[in-house]
Length: 193
Image (cartoon, rainbow, N blue to C red):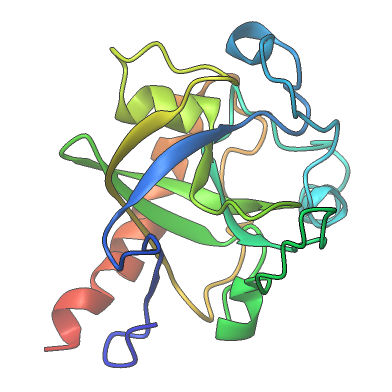
């Protein structure tokens, strides 16, 4: 976390930018470009919070319609003795479904902190966000963006945007509904100087 700007950013194990794996969990599991995902789950981590926020109008995030990212993980020690510690971004004050900025493919897009991972990976994105970032890479549930050139920015204290287009039928509409609030959050960077 950068304490000057009050922004959390993900980095890889070498301290650089992250890559972008694809998360197919939630309402879009097994659909479209997620039909080849061997690990997809039927629910995202914050399904109940989303239902509360939308008064039941949206049952869960859909990887094909909602731009969301995975920022936390919880490690289950496996037979190989994986003893790495979990990373819970909520301990840094980042709230479920709050806006996240993703800088990728020389552009910036907005999404929400929408899921957690049961393994060691963070820096996953919904398929729809991946396709906005890298439209020519043929991303799918089984093929992410491997280059470490993606920056994920989260904003401690930001709340889930109640006025977002949660019922949007496409990622561009949903992402655009986050822009006004997202721009205000990104402006923290310039104010930190």
